[in-house]
Structure formats: structure tokens, C-alpha cells
Amino acid sequence: MSSEHDDAALLDELEALLRARHEPPPEVLHAARASFTWRTVDAEIAALTHDSLLDEAQGTRAVAPPRILTFEAGGLTIEVELDAASSGRRLLGQLVPGQAAELELCHRGDVVGTATADAWGRFALALPPTRSRVTVRCRLRDGSVVESASAVV
Image (cartoon, rainbow, N blue to C red; front, side, top):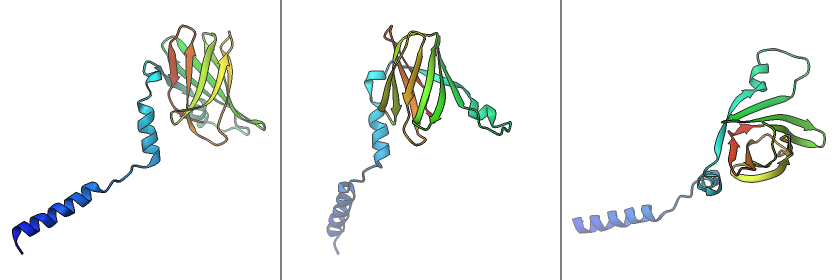
């Protein structure tokens, strides 16, 4: 065989390899698209500062207390309690200091629920039926946006 023939065969093989497209898993594509969502580019991220599930794990109780999570960013605290009533799972929450705000519950970058906090900062957000990783996005009256760190609830 000539070296030209070997080179041509090698180039054909290389072209076939490069032509083959391997799609990433759908969840990777979704996460990549969500990372380029510009509408919350200026959102301040509220860090998880308390999770009663972690604190209560050290003791034992006959009846499990409600799960309470606290997120903090700057001067805003987002306190939520996981409520698993027969009518469905939801987050009952309050913004501190109390203030009116528009809230969005986000799962994998998509808004899956909305609510309005009243003047005292109280709100309720319906949760997906099964445990999911979610964030709570708060659009405050002054135009600022605060988004909680993600948590599995």
C-alpha cells in the first residue's frame, strides 16, 4: 500500500469521527441553558444559614418537627417551613424585614410556582409533589432580586 492511500484512509476515518455528534444528556443541556438566563444576572444569592433537618439529626424525637430553612443575603432573611399537608406540599415563608414582594419557585432553572408576599412578608409556595432541588427568587419592591441557594425539599 502506498502512504498516500494510508493517509487518505486515515483522513476518512478522522472525518467520520469528527462528523459524529454526541449529544450531552438533557439535564446538562438544560443546566447550560439556565446558566445563561440574563433576567436574574444581578440577583443576590441568599446563603443557607440554618436547616433544622441538620440540627435535629443530633437528637431523637417521637414526632418529626417541621423542617425550617433560613437563607440570608445582605439585609434580607428568607425563612421557610416545609408543610406536607394532605392537600399537597408547600413552603410557608416570611421575608424579614417584612415587605411585599413577588416570589418564584424555581426547579432546574424553570419557574414552577409563583406567589406574592404580603406587607408583612408572609407567603406560601406550592411545591412539586416529590422531593426536588429548588430555589426561591424574591423580586422586591425596590427592584432588587434575591435568590436563595438551592435546597432539596
